[in-house]
Length: 308
Image (cartoon, rainbow, N blue to C red; front, side, top):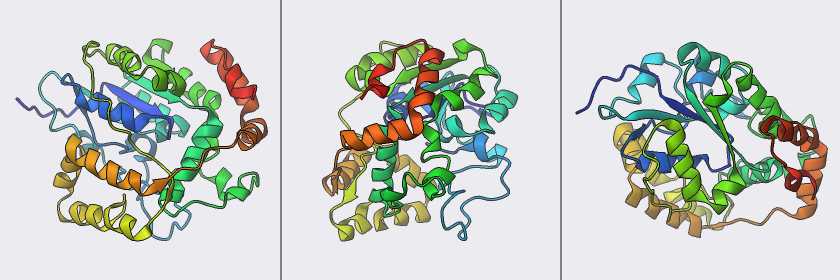
């Protein structure tokens, strides 16, 4: 039995990007107690924008391909939920948005939120590989130029300032409303981590999701012609999305279809590892002090993040 939800989600996954949020979204979506909106509507960060996806925005400072700025449209994202299901939504932009915590507090003051944090240098490098896979990566040699695009966009270097970003949420919400996990723990014990997250949002924690798929792989494209056919912005994706957006998003959420496309795309990608020298340099140059602050905030040792 479906219902007219007309209500905001019960929980949000607020970030960080390139830290496992796509996998968490898919594992939540498999749970029968949970209904997930399509990923990254970014509503609470962009709801006051007059428009998004401006073609003149060459550096894509305001680029939100699945963004929603209309309240009614946002609530309709949950229309297919079944009576009694928990409603969830994943938008990694919320973590580094100055606006999102305030807007979330206004709309859903009792919401539960989840943040998954990855070593900030690893996250930044993964972001670079993701951009490379879309042929949009800025020159990595400009990373240490603080006037470059690497420091202008919130989802590049700035997204890794976790302590600074989380403080905005802790200033507005109770501590028990926010669950922070580390990517390392998720990677080592994904089933246990998901069990904890299911319990946190109020779902059956004994449910075991299918974890056989590697989501959101990033890297350099080997064959551009193949990528133009079935890549993220390839012909097949664009054709279905333009012809019928509703069918497109339903197909995208189908495990078999998604798994097939991911295998095809992953085979056409190579991901060179982050070198220890670059990881150390990024950490020392940008993130050392913030990691130390995060260590205190989470009451957990993060020496493995800054003693490289």
